[in-house]
Amino acid sequence: MKTKQLTIAAVIVAINIVLSYVAKIPTPTGFVSLVETGIFIAAWHYGSRTGAMVGGLTGLLLDLLAGYPQWMIFSLLIHGGEGWVIGKYGLNPSIGKRVFGNFLGGLVMVVGYWLASSFLIWLNGGAKMQLGPAFLAGLADVPANIMQVLAGFILALLLSVPLRKILMPKSH
Image 1 (tube, helix red, strand yellow):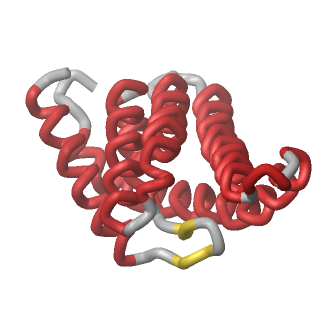
Image 2 (cartoon, rainbow, N blue to C red):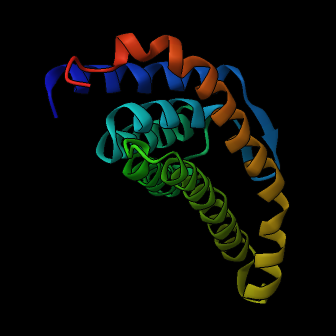
């Protein structure tokens, strides 16, 4: 990773944390934020490694700062995976593949948090909690997570074009 790219990725992480911390809506298992905005922008402009780094670091640090340490590792993996998937397809010249990558990355986030939420519900339920009801209870945040992906995607689309000249290396 080039120094300029690493620096821009670090700035995106910082801005993403501020944006996500300011604009968050509490839910029973965490919160809805605009964390996807920076993940989409980083992945679209720099690919899978930067998308994964921005996603993972933003998710981990945001949970740490917001007081949800039980989510930190899940967020590192889920948002990192989301950024990696989006970035894997984000630089492809085919619009269809880019759309597929955005959908697949969003799916990684929604399904990842559904599974993580279900696991934490099951874990907190003690010996009496069965896994089936925990998976059903974990579905409660799926609509909010879908909205989070869509909101982040739309805001990233709006910001991406004006930022293109700043973010894109000269070779593109």
